[in-house]
Image (cartoon, rainbow, N blue to C red; front, side):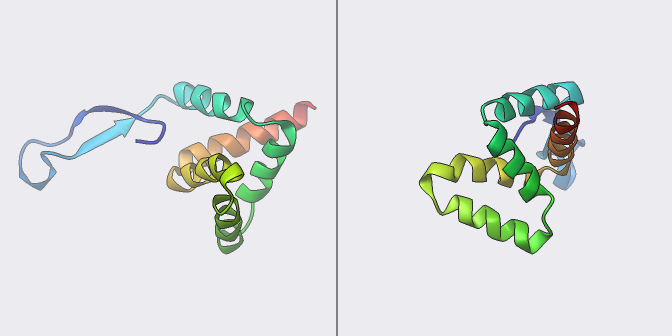
Length: 103
């Protein structure tokens, strides 16, 4: 599921017995996100940061625009992953801002 790996089931019976939670260490998450970001060029990383900083409805519109074009669908998938995982989104924003600060 996303950038996480299954660790096992939580609970001992009842409605929660079959529920699986996924966790990932923060350094592993950052490594996986860094791999995805490194595949993007500087302009795409700047666009990613821009879109992630937009208000909710504007961000949703931009994601829809990227999703609507086959050539930018992978970029839309990355944005959707960020919408689904707030921690990943925070790590990406922090990493991109840190990268811009170094340049």
